[in-house]
Length: 326
Image (cartoon, rainbow, N blue to C red; front, side, top):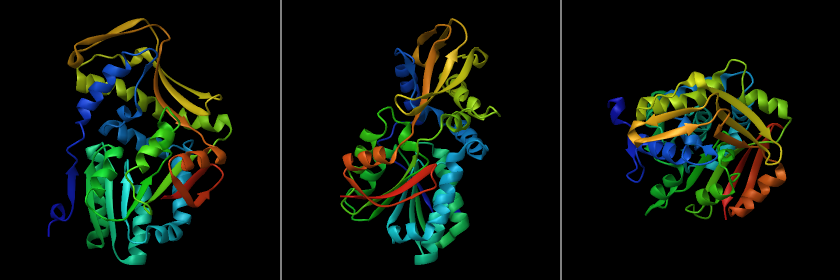
């Protein structure tokens, strides 16, 4: 059987095209005061590739810490999977999930996996790589969808057990601190369904600043790519030389904040939106937030979302928790 016939890419009908969603978000976010954009705008095909570079940066500890945690505890985690369907939410390049898939196959001979992402190229690349590596030992269906649509779509009329994964501290990227999002994520899960959740722990501010503003300038390119994406997809003419990347640690909210700051007074027309946006000198665009958690804060999030903690693993910098729906 040809490789292409051994896996499927499913496009959930309820998801807007990435280009439409991006256009809508640019219109919303740049039209508000203060200006802001949702972090999903960062992850087109180019942005996803740049983020892979970020993960390899010496200063970006998050990916390295979580990968070591998963590698060190893969046997225990696979016991909690125990034949359930692995649902990787926001799969990216899928490398961390691959560790657990390999262990699940080792213990049970077969793994069932749904790599899901709004970036179709990420889903296609990860799904194809899994088949090339694991072959008939894996049943895999890639799903192009928003994270909140994935589990309802999968469980509708189906009794399959879910072991979802939301890794990489993505929960911290929501302006509410993730509480509302975790509640929404858990709502369609049935009692006994499980979630492997990654969260970044609160630590000294210099380590945080270095991680989000690397000396090589990769994170700067990552954020500026949003403006270049607008040029590519929406026909605008942002001059990235007139914007600077700025990172701060908000001690009051316990979160990292990434901004693009206009260096001059300027106005940019966006043809697809048929609209102009004015920027004052030193005016910021909030691009991304990343909350950092204490153990007390994590326990509050979990309880409010109606989960219970079955197990947790930490190296003092990062934590992964196995949660079960009550």
